[in-house]
Length: 98
Image 1 (cartoon, rainbow, N blue to C red):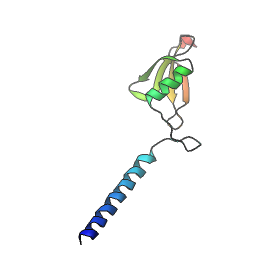
Image 2: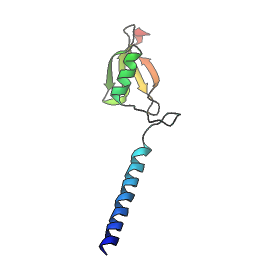
Image 3: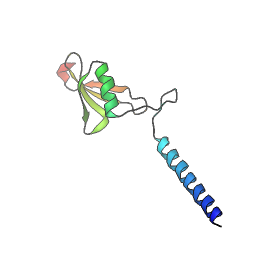
């Protein structure tokens, strides 16, 4: 009887673990190669700095909406694609910078 109880408990734990990991993986963005994409602010900041942007900040605490200065010193508002982590949209923050 104890052996059956142990088996039942083990099956319950395994089922719960599989259910939790399936739910966690549903929202993770992946690229075309099936690799997980990190769209965190820190990752975007590093990538954008490598592209020449400076003073990168989140807008209203949203890691997918950023402000940054380009090489010419113009401030841009950037929208990050939640699936790819790349810039979806970029517009000047001030009309005189266009």
